[in-house]
Length: 337
Image (cartoon, one colour):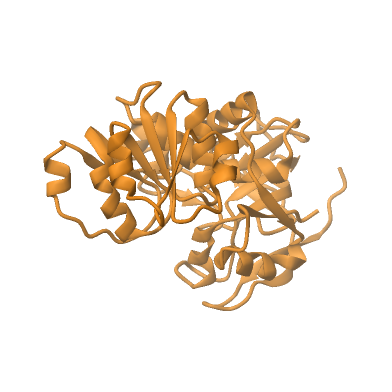
């Protein structure tokens, strides 16, 4: 396969600056890595860690990556040229720390993060560590599948790791954005009764179409009271970074219920809301490669779809700005090729 000597990448050179398209030399992958031609890379709010200089710069952002393997090093046995692959937030692990010894790679003490500690997918090509690579079916649309490696695995993995959650239990999804619209679909296909929580009526039809059994518009009803009329939520999956709203919703949990937050925000609440019902607040990160493969396979089997808007690599600043201002329904995806 003939490969170019250079490739385009969108890089942040200084905190707060725009993404700049540059030409980078295309290097052969070293042992333990593979070279991937990027077909799609989702834009995530956490890419702001690069945009605003919360990590070492310069850096190429992007951790919702799907592409085709174009080169592997001598001795690589798992991946071959032509494989359709992807990689998410988890960009590699050390194999040696306590978490790794328990196969909990996402909490590795030396975890590599795609697009944060190593260059990511806002580019025509990316080098991925082999232990963080996900096999992706070629039947899936790359742009629609890319967000499954972050928003998808985060909602899927968090729900499946609530160990006392059973089919038929009431699960409320707070926030109907990039994570929430996938959370509704995953929760429904896992067999739960799903309540969509929003602050307007504008997304009611969409939430119902995605699988919500109930829709509670916080501008019209008291969501806590309505949840308790339904018996209380076994789980409230908080996908929107709205600390006050999350704290207020604690009263909508049933006895022993869990506030499961995947949104990054500050929380201020009274522990009375937890003590009286033996309820809890739990956080969850995304997942490692096997988790992502499971999330993708589940989505394919149950026809779970990501709603995306696509942009060329040259439109990266427009795409990021629209994501940041909430103008995207529901995930922005770069398609570099």
